Length: 302
Ligand SMILES: Cc1cc2nc3c(=O)[nH]c(=O)nc-3n(C[C@H](O)[C@H](O)[C@H](O)COP(=O)(O)OP(=O)(O)OC[C@H]3O[C@@H](n4cnc5c(N)ncnc54)[C@H](O)[C@@H]3O)c2cc1C
Image (tube, rainbow, N blue to C red; front, top):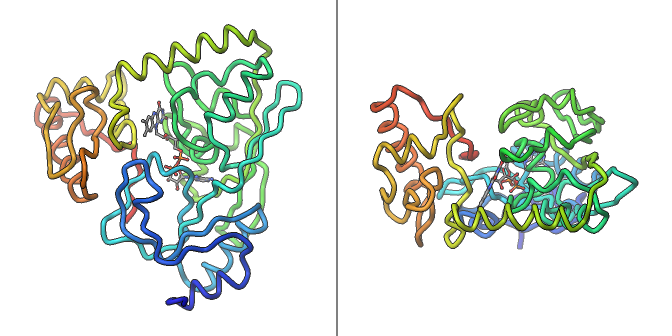
């Protein structure tokens, strides 16, 4: 039985699955988050437009979600429709171009690039997100970022009516862990990446090296959303947090990882309130010690 008329109206026009009052903890790497009004899996661009259109007409907010590896949803849940892209996950290779839908995982893109002897995507090794989330966040590491490989992005703009637009990389406004796409609430539906011809064995070696380095330096055995804070100009947030003596600091089930100080891990049963309290503890201790105001990289959705 449908509880909400909004969900009813979405069900009528969307082809993909619609899960009413779906707990978001099941859809985030933190394993945290109360229910959304509904979680919808669009099948393609048209379906994604239909979700946005129907939600808008019903006055409901739409939040787009990939693998949920960079978000913290509040415990009470959110009065919004969550549109999860993971059933839009086709990938095609044409020469040095890799075209991928928003819900394709970065690990699959990297795997396919490797099989075609294409290099440049190795930085994706161990980043657990989707192409859409990664483009929107300009995900990356010191080895590269989405900005360095993305040539074109297809987005749904919804500011003045719905419009599907192709953005050249320069129009996407890539910057450190952000884009114009994120700022303006556009929805990425696919992206075209340009890679370089390389040697498959060398790409494999480099990828393995990066994965091994993550295993050594990151707490991959506990739920997290990766780095919580952006690095301030010229220094690493993790180092500032470690120097403030905060490794191992806890609030409820949330803990500043003793392995990597910029990770707040869920040690079991952590709530969003626990994580947020710890985020504030870290921010104020670092501010008191250094005068630097840490900015969160993770997206907090209330
Ligand atoms: C163990 C671990 C390691 C990590 N390492 C790194 C790292 O090295 N570098 C790094 O940059 N990140 C890292 N992350 C963070 C995260 O994996 C990346 O930011 C990733 O790109 C997020 O993708 P996602 O699909 O999970 O996005 P989500 O978490 O689902 O969403 C993140 C944001 O992007 C928006 N979004 C999602 N999909 C779309 C779309 N299709 N169109 C428009 N907006 C969208 C969401 O609304 C949200 O604001 C790590 C996370 C974990 C858990």
